[in-house]
Amino acid sequence: MNAQRGNHSLVRALMALYLGLWAAPTLALDSETKSRIVETRNCKGCRLQGENLAGLDLRSVLFEQADMKNMRLAGRDLSHANFKGANLSGADLSGANLSEADFSEANLVGAKLRGANLRGAILVDAVLSKADLRDADLKGAQLNGTKLTEARLSGARLREANFFATDFTGTDLKGQVLMGVDLASSILKGADLTGVNLSRANLESVDLRGANLSMALLLEANLNNAQMDGARLHRANLSHASLMGTRCDRADFSQANLQKVNALGASFIGADLRGARLLDADLMQAKFRNARLEGVMLKGASVCESDLPPLVKAQGSCAEAVFITDVDDL
Image 1 (cartoon, helix red, strand yellow):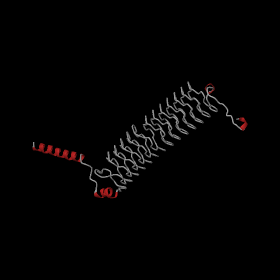
Image 2: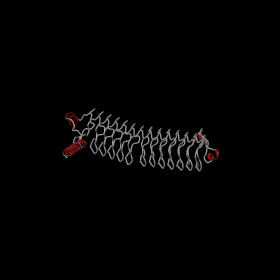
Image 3: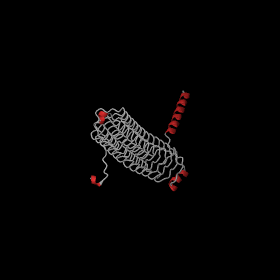
Image 4: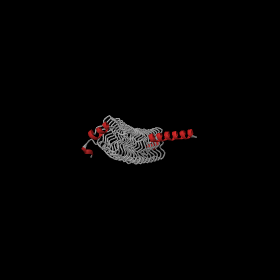
């Protein structure tokens, strides 16, 4: 009996020790590191993984090249801090104030940034693959060259942000308002852009292969030299957009509004244009081999040197230009 009681006591003691270790708080910050943060505001190259920064003023601190993997910084004020080249993978920055912070070349893979204030933040060449940016405020943020593959961006405020050469491969951007945004040379391959508003956006040389742009607004958008092979643009509105030299092979433009588009030299090989409106469009030198053209509307379209089938081509016009060579001709 005494032996059993002894065993029970030992088990309870071991359980208490285990639970105590499991619930133990993060180790206190060593005095040298704390001094660097509090007095010099310089923690460049610090190894902070697992450290507790509670109670410290972290505004404008230099954390360049610091190891901050999986750190818990939710709700903290880190405005104007410098995280250039830092490792913040898996870090929890939910609801944090990161306005005008510098995350250039930082590793933010899988970081939690939901509801964070990233206004004016610099994220140039940062890696935010699979990061959670839902409801984050990115107004005026610099994201040139940023990797946002498979990032979660629903509810995020992206207007006035800069996205030149940004990688959005496989990213969900449904319903976003990106009017006038500069996305030139960006990668949106396989991205979900259903219902997105990209009116007057600069999408020159963008990779939209396999992207879903169904019901998207692309009014007056610049899509010159873009790659749109296999993209879905069912019922999208591209009125007055420019698609000069754009590749749209096997893309779905069914019931899309392409009125007055400039598609000079564009390629629609194997594309689905059933019921599409191409009224007054410039289709000179455009390629339509094997395209589905049932119900397409081409009234007023310029079809010179295009390879449209004769019966379809007859809907458009190919009036030769009249050149004025003498003032008497006026």
